[in-house]
Image 1 (cartoon, rainbow, N blue to C red):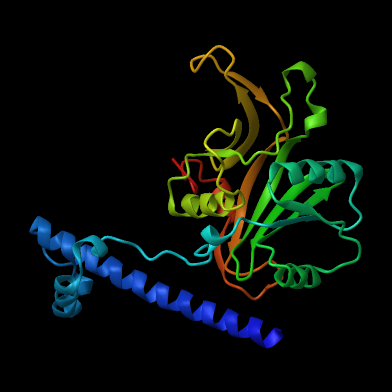
Image 2 (image 1 turned 90 degrees about the vertical axis):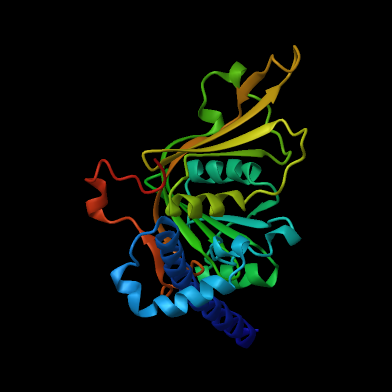
Length: 292
């Protein structure tokens, strides 16, 4: 078992390295092609490779020439629905336990497990043995949920989020405005994930949910505003026809702040970080990491 995992990890890292080299080559060919089409000089740093790049451009198919290399962590997601294991930090408080129970209903095909004394490596090993596709860990500080980790299995990536302004379903005061908790597969709204890091984050989040049926009346929204991702959960009814929609919030609601994406699973501390929120980024008010 360990040898197989090590072999798969080495093959995955080799593919990632090959993709990086191919991505650099595609970028060089794109710059040379644009210069030729616009009648501009070839960039200085590419003049030594101009002859070889022109030869490769002539060999490329026009449809393939503009495509980008895509990471293959989610290449097999269409073969089966996601299976999620949800757990918490050790000795969870009552608010964290309640929040984890509500998250279990938010994510279809999710199973909640009491952490007990298990360490992360044991949990990840058990997930791999039972074909779990994603592991979600919820953390707290002084009884308030403050962290969410999403680790895709078997090879990653792992996204680390901060949790803010958590309001559980039971904390919403207007009980009449709350809709019934549905277990149907939801439609997703991913708003304002326009940058490379934003597209990566949206890709991680959307693959936690299976494909819904067209008549599903459940909606989950991830809306990015100033790099804070607002999560909202609604159901709707069409009582007076297609133009009359009764929208009700289901809960919970919270904000996410991405601060790290790691190219590995959660127990692999040696894995390389793809994105990390640095302290100086907090003062750059005009800089948007995830979207415009």
